[in-house]
Length: 140
Image 1 (tube, rainbow, N blue to C red):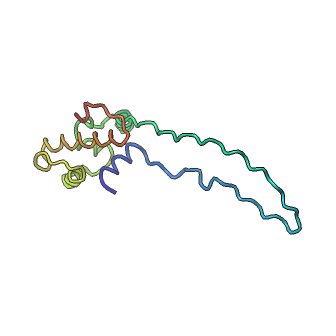
Image 2: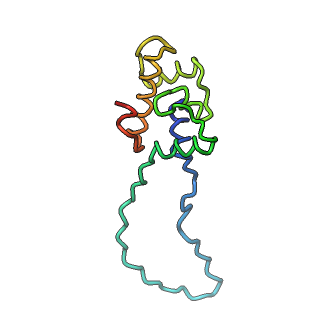
Image 3: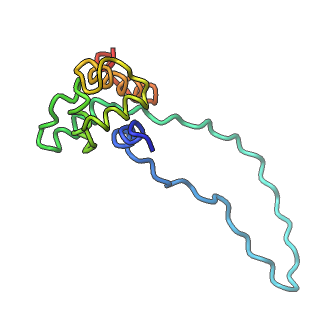
C-alpha cells in the first residue's frame, strides 16, 4: 500500500467488509417420499440503482482529529509535515520523498518549503479526485 493510500484510508475511514454476504437462502432437501411442491416464481423486481457514497468532508474530518488530539494539529491546512503528524504517520524526509515520487511532485529540492507546499497541494488534490470534499484553497 502506498503512502497516499494510507493517508486516504485514515481520512476516509477504513471501509470494512460488512457486505450482505451470500444473499441467498439455502433450501432444505425434500424428505424421502415427499411429494415435490411447485412454487410460483416471483416476478422479477426492478433493481435499485446503486447509491453513491456521500463525499467525505476532508476539512471537517481533519479538524475533528485535531480537536480529539487536544486541538494541537499544527498547521495541517497548509503543511504536509503537520498533516502527516496529525494522521500519526511518518513525516520524515524519506517518507515525504516517497510520497512525492508516488504523486509525481517534482517541485524544489526534497524537503524544501517549495516541495512541501506542492506535496500538500498534491495530496489535497488527490483526495478531492477520490471523492473527498476539499476546499479549493487547500490545493490551488
